[in-house]
Image (cartoon, rainbow, N blue to C red):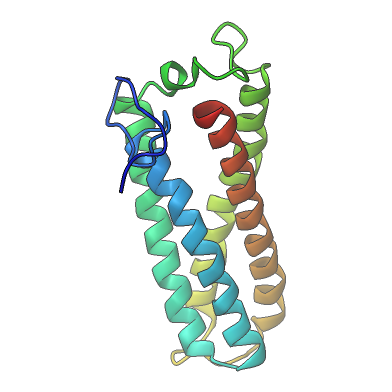
Length: 173
């Protein structure tokens, strides 16, 4: 597959989408395109088909995939990639005003979704594992799980949308 744009040299490992994004920025951007529909299918299966055990299995796989992706992403961003250098050519980024330029504000908004989402997903999964029997069936914890699970799904959607906006502003534009 040919890259979308010609890529110049930046610190870290270049991504595969042909933008200025690093490998992990590209992986996470594409992963969210898969995670959101799989999340929607999992919710559909539990809500309308009453496939509780399948919902549990899908959520555990999503949780592990997300945790591995977040750890790999943070290693890449903190030790391999200088994202600011990759964002410099963007009309929406200013190194001097990193946190007050449009791309910086987009990143702050994204982090306001991403950090609570990570914590919320861990809490929802751990509580479900502790409070639902195996095999999984509805119980006393169901009402709470539905509330917090919905909130986690909404947060994940917000994380994806704000992440894509930041990615575009910093590494595509």
